[in-house]
Length: 507
Ligand code: SF4
Image (cartoon, rainbow, N blue to C red; front, side, top):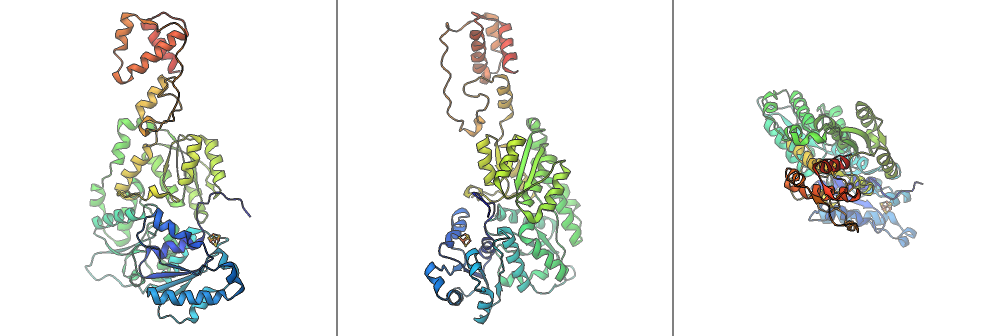
């Protein structure tokens, strides 16, 4: 038993649903108790899909347990085939159904359906959602993929794009961005899978020269199988961040035997210039804590350190299958990785490290909010706002632009940070107030007007010195100087008082 309030991943059958829902022509018959249909909402509400996931639930109830639940499953599978006529069926059990051991795979076989039926063995009590997705995709690829077809002489190289699923963080736009990158290199896309692919498309996987693995968590197992069984090489670099995108271009070009020099020369993202421009100087050395799935956490750590000059003070993942990779990445930043799916441990680490920025999942957003630390989301699990209407990839050069804007946005802007250092007592822009560009500073009561005698008078030369201060900060400078004078019982503000006040507030 483990006390859990938040979980980073769902049970593995949700991973299987993500594959079925991403694809066309696949239907999933899930032996599950009444109520498990809640998972539909992940797709229809969070991802805002316009149709129900292709899943039939047996939805057994307590009274069914006294009868024949196996027959219930057979009936559901028979009906689902007759109704949806899929090209391939997935059958499996959710956590509760796993306990009653009806063997959906064996039962489905006895139905003699005229399409491939892939039986899923998903150990719900040991494994989680991403593992379930990877296993399901691998099983489907194994059942469908045809032999390798060598490229015809003179034909353009072809790549499969593997890994994008339903409910994937920015998968929709990452596919578009990577497809564009490949097109610039003169590489045709053979099959994108599972997103948008049919089982018939999976039979053509062998026609590609290379597998582009976008998300190792969901496509790593299938890509390793295709490499082993069909000799199709797979990419290792995930193109998140400018450096990684350039490395990805070089890697994929080498794997298909083409020259990437021209594409690398024209490769453009605004991130490098934006982060070199003087306005970003104040970002240097910002202490950042990173947590998420392994792919996004590793990529974020590299981008943060190499492209935004942040200092990575914490790095961790809930993807236990990729703990080794995250540990290696953490070592490169001189820190120890945090491998856990317990959000309380993550909260503890953030509280102890006191970073200036947290890059994480929806959970870290809540934690950071509680601790008053700025935060941006870099990885699933995410809420509905991270399935945006606008184009928002994380990958490729446009992805790097999106990353720059997203990560810098929650931080206090440079000028405000500087002014806060100088004028800490300001009632509106005070220390601890939220960045004003976010427009939701907590309502603070203006400090009561002091009962002491009226404001000190400004000596003429102090008044003209005050006018040298830019207009947008002059009001604050005046207020701060007056309160400084009041506290000290000064009746006249001289140039000296003005500078003493400045020195006082910037301490
Ligand atoms: S079967 Fe699993 S997913 Fe369904 S309600 Fe029970 S624990 Fe949750």
